[in-house]
Structures are given as structure tokens and as C-alpha cells.
Length: 337
Ligand code: KG4
Ligand code: ZN
Image 1 (cartoon, rainbow, N blue to C red):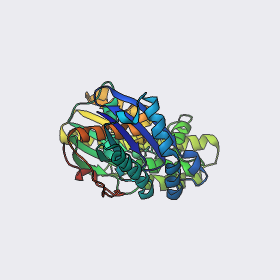
Image 2 (cartoon, helix red, strand yellow; image 1 turned 135 degrees about the horizontal axis):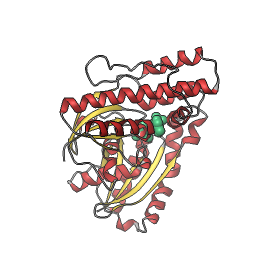
Image 3 (tube, helix red, strand yellow; image 1 turned 90 degrees about the horizontal axis):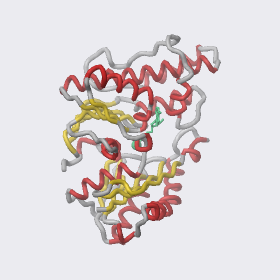
């Protein structure tokens, strides 16, 4: 089956074609980052309008890049939620309409299931079961994954997501949106030992997380520093170290609690090199297998939606013409396949 994947949950239009026999055939991405940069964050109405402008040409380009014709597509997978409702509606309308016009089945994919399964696009995918650390701009959670659709959320952020904390702290440091990768770059110039940030919610048991306090701690630290580039780099270093350390502590705890030996990290923050290095170190020390997606499949993309949708379509799942977009959609409400 050749599945056309459509991702429009936030500020990226991602289109891909996944073949259940041959793997990924093509994927194209249009990022709206420049459009939102002036506002310091995503403006939902502008995001929806830009998806409308970009989606159809991108579908055409992806089909051409895969050297296919629209007749060759056997199914459509589009992001049904969670995300910005206006943005989701664009992908849902186009996805559902194309399936109707081409007389092929469609399925609505959970965006976080897409992230969670993104490492399956790799040549060396993880086996089930595993613990997944999902860290994106909108969500941070630790999930016990027994199989596709068999998800138990063991812990999640009670306030800001990890990516959101990166973005907000980056803004305080005067960096552009989205600041996560820029903060990580600035941290490379930072030195250890100048600032000590807290490791929130690590001294008590449990797997829930909280990152908004780190942002407040950063705000106070920035206003008390001398404002030099080196001081900012040192703050970026200490902030990143605290987030990474906190995530590492929580992952270790989840692995111990569930006696699992496999860890998958996914979502935008899984592109963070420091986080990857720390988990690699954990892997060596404790004999844990660690998996993460290729950099291009860490942040939002159509390939992960095409892959997740392909699994559900192959299992016979279908979405009707009257299905609503789901701006809020708990991951553990999905059905097992
Ligand atoms: O998964 P994603 O593309 O979108 C959501 O589903 O939210 O994640 C985007 C988030 C942003 O907050 C961005 O700053 C963060 O991932 N991010 C990073 C890095 N690359 C992306 N955060 C830290 N370090 C990075 N290298
Ligand atoms: Zn995402």
C-alpha cells in the first residue's frame, strides 16, 4: 500500500508517501518559521492560512518526487489532532476530500503517535515493548508502549512542555522563535559551573514533570547577570543541563519501575544533541538500548504521519466523512491494532 501522509497540526506543512513494502518514497516539508518569527510564536490564524496556500502544491510535489501518479495512492493518513484546530482542519479537509475524490480509504492519525513511531522509519527500528520519552513543543510525556495503540502514560508535564520551556527561555535570552535549537547552539559556547538550575520534581517519587519553574529561574538569573554574551551562553548551558538531567532522571526511573530495557525518544526536543549524548551514556552505563529518529523526523513531518497511518490502514481502520478534528486528544484513548 502507498500511503499519502499529511501533517498540519502546527506551523509545518509536511507531506510524505510511505510504501508498506518499500518504505518511505518521498517527503516534503514547508516550515512557516519565518512567518511567525516576528511575533515570537505561532499565530494560529496565520498558520491556518499558510497551510491552505501550501498544502496542495506540496501534495503535487511529493507525488512527483516519488515518481508516482495520484492513481498510485492507496490510502490517506492525515493528522487529526492534537494541535491548533484551524491548522488541523486544513489537513483534515484536504486529506478527507482527496480520499473521497480518489475513492480510497482515509485514517486520522494522532500527532503524538506519529512522533512516537518515527524511529520505526529507521533502518534499525526498536522492537516492542519500550519506554518512550515524548518531548515536543506542546507535550512532554513518558509512555509505556506495549505495541501500536497500547500506550500507558506513566508521567507528563503538569505545566510547560520541555520544548515550550526551551522556547520561552530562549526568548528571555533574546533569541528568535523557535528558540530551542538556537538555545542549544548558544549553550555550546557556555561553560559549566557558573549557574546551578534546579531539577524540578526529581526529589519526590513519580514520573510527572514540570518545566515552568525553570523558565522563571532563568528569567531571574538573566536579570541578575551582567548581560554579556558569555553570561548568556553560561545560562543557556545551565538551563539545558537542568532539562536534560531532569529528563534523564525520569527516564531511568521509568525503566526501573517497568523493568524495561528499551528507550525511545521522539518529538522536537529529541533533536537536542546534549539529550542524545546523555541517553547514549545511560545506554553504555546501564545496558539500555536507546533509539531516536533521524534529525529530520524529530520535529514535525509528514513521514511519521504516513507511517503511523499506514499501520492503522493495514489493520483495517477507517475514518468517516463526518469525523471532527481533535484539538485535544489523549494518547491513551487510542485503540490497539
Ligand atoms: O515536535 P515538534 O516539531 O512540534 C510539536 O509537536 O510541538 O517540536 C518542536 C519543539 C520546539 O519547542 C523546539 O524549540 C524544540 O522542539 N526543539 C529543540 C531542538 N530542536 C527542536 N529543543 C531543544 N534542542 C533542540 N535541538
Ligand atoms: Zn510535533
